[in-house]
Length: 453
Image 1 (tube, helix red, strand yellow):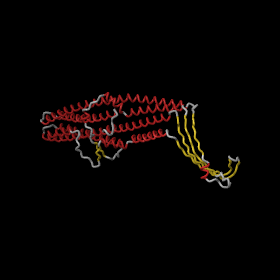
Image 2: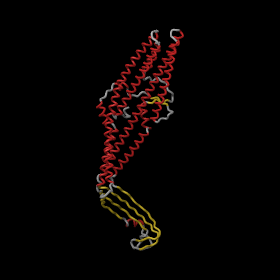
Image 3: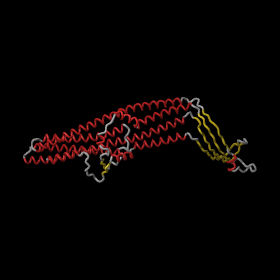
Image 4: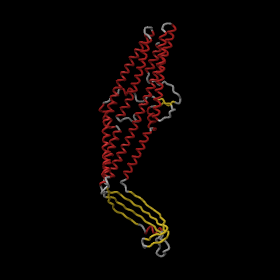
């Protein structure tokens, strides 16, 4: 009987055993690899990166507004039928070819600081979108960590259930021998058979829970449902998490300094403030410089010495050239309430951005506080689970020895065995819960990143 006791104790103590044989097509997946897959395949992240490209394009466009605008124009036209000669004031019927070529440029000297504030706005929106991309990455790591550690826990609980079934089945075979020898009543055998059947049901439930949680993880990673994965323990050490201590105020300050969703809210507020100034710029006059150069060709222009022949295109290109330049001042007088409406919309958008920032600041404090309290509680829960496990192990050993020498009964042994198995499961649950609390704290303080996992 000491051998059977050793089997159960060793099976329940080695929480991180790795001696498991997997099918050849099973992918052993580390946490880092899972995060990389999620980063590569996640649709939300890819969309946010596309939005970042849009923000970059908007920023470049805003900067380019300081450069002059240059445009070219050319046209070719053939007129058939009745026409009017503006030079001679006569009408005629003929076929006429006309061509025009023009290049112009304009530069805004003053626009009420609209370009300046547009630059501020696009820069703020660009920074906001960069923070959104970073926070989306953190969301992915958080979700993957939650599901990944749940699968690890499911695997551990299944191992515990399998070890328990093995020991209980061995105990059943021994009791059957005792019954045949007449040293134990038949009721002990029947009770043990019921216990084995119950454990088989629990093991089936554990297997099903593992399959479902693996399916959820594969869905998050956007893997083919037919692929088989086997997550392995994360590289961050459990002992390092266990000895770590935090200060709530320091965690809150870290969150305010690092939370990218909060930084994004601040950037959105800055962009909304710049939008107010952009709307105000419509009250100011706009001063622009402009200039153009062009030429034209007409088949109606004839040679002086030969009225039947049109002046060549090359000669007209030089002789018909025209240059113009000047200043243009555009003074707004009445905008039919358009500017007032723009300012009102911009002000309300700014007020809404302030409300979002204020609400997020309070939310961050509550999230950090809850994560901190959960971490402290998880450490206490782990220590309590360890004490429970050690006490249950001692009680199991005593009841096993009592049953072996005929002093104890099967009811007491079954009860102590069940308590021992439950304690092992509670310890595994507490361990993986505490591991995930590290991810939760890093996530809510904004320091979670793919390089540090």
